[in-house]
Image (cartoon, rainbow, N blue to C red):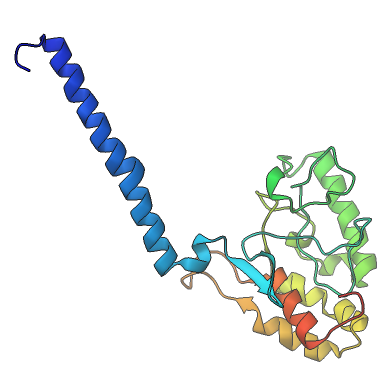
Length: 213
């Protein structure tokens, strides 16, 4: 080995280091992390999947639309935030598509965004029979990813009367159910209180089933 030229010995040493670090960092470390995550954070490591009646129906990390085949919101379900995550080439993709995650990238004074918000306010006012002044900001604006699974408690409570009427339940009962699903700030100080729409709607189907649910 010592008889080899210096440049060859340097390349062989570099090759050995490449092999060692490939095994350690590219194989061993990922396998250890996967093993630890499966044991300690099994649900999170597998996408925080949510099951209903033995079938995976979504993820608690991703929003999903509760609409009919034409994209109209179903009155018997709580509705998520608006979503820009949709395939622009599809006429049946209405948002919450993880393959097209993204926001509108429009500034707060952009006339297109302002018009979109006004249109959403009108739609929600008619759909939920509320005044525009009662509509919280997250009900008419998209999240940065377009895939936010949560809505504000104010947004959820705004929808109570409409959901109760569609399910022939008392508003008080539906409001109490919403209260059970209000999550506080992470670690007590990060973010804002929130309600996961998917898990709330699953609870609705379990306790107050409606036709078409």
